[in-house]
Length: 130
Image 1 (cartoon, one colour):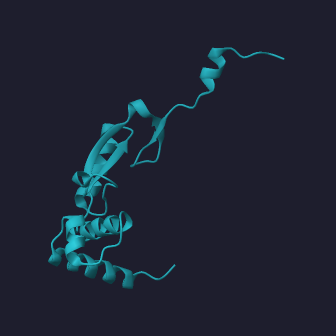
Image 2 (cartoon, rainbow, N blue to C red):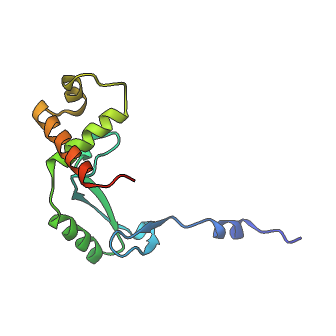
Image 3 (cartoon, rainbow, N blue to C red):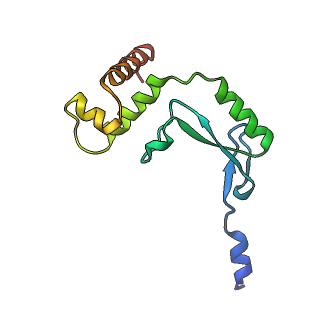
């Protein structure tokens, strides 16, 4: 039986790849162009400083510019961001029993919470159940 040397084993290790958000091509991770775009549907799982921002990856400067332009044309809906913050707060930690407690956990004020809930409910009514 043939023994494979260290060089052969290293050659088989998968190369870390990225996926272009514009064209879907895969490319080596170290060639990625990255940036942040405003997106009201995006909240960070643990760091609220990144709420409303989405990390994007592209295979070239031109594709990164195209992705940024696509997000620039999208509407930024504050109620969508607030609803995502509420969803994150309800999904982590214990039960929330009052609007004040929800406000402390999300950093939102009562009018923002009410607008987010109304936005969420209106959107659910428009979508058919799965």
